[in-house]
Length: 262
Image 1: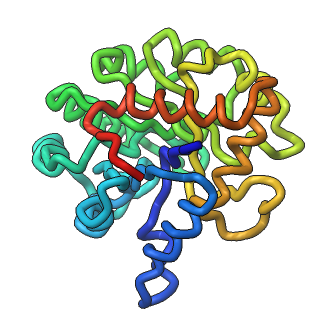
Image 2: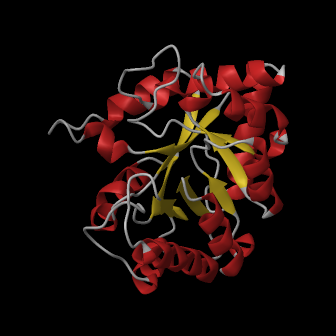
């Protein structure tokens, strides 16, 4: 059995310590069957640190982007294209819209989202989308910028089946984090039952959102197995079947990620 953590943040996991914790984090995850990792960039200015594990480990891949809530720096299409041309970078993002943490005049956030999609279209690489309290504007921009041409994933999905169907209709995958295991996540669980199995990914979003039974702890990739087991139970399939399909889905979407012996 091989699982893929399709969205994690190694840099944020180890930023509390000067010691390099990534080897130990990876080893704990591999002991739980997690064979591949997508290390996702949220600050363009820290991209070199996001890229580093992907340059060291053949089973780690990277993205490049700037989180929608970051109002302290900016990035343009040319910068994104240049960084994402690296052969270890398999996606653009995370990007998107977040009206929960950001307020006021948010044209800058919407334009940044458009910039990321345009860069993804230039490179024919998928886009990783963060969406919170911004469903209508997110899908409007996805359609206007032809995000269907790049494909991508709605990361850390926290919406209902209707919203999932909108993303599926644009050719996007849906990724579930530990939130799907929470008792109050009935709408998310309903979506997880209905989405075609060949369009589902799983993630930790570590160090955030640890799944039950680890809820309240700092999340890490080794906890992905709990989310995978929960999804398998929801779908009435074995963990092995869920792992095989979600792993295949990852490599189908992120075509720049190559399977290696793990």
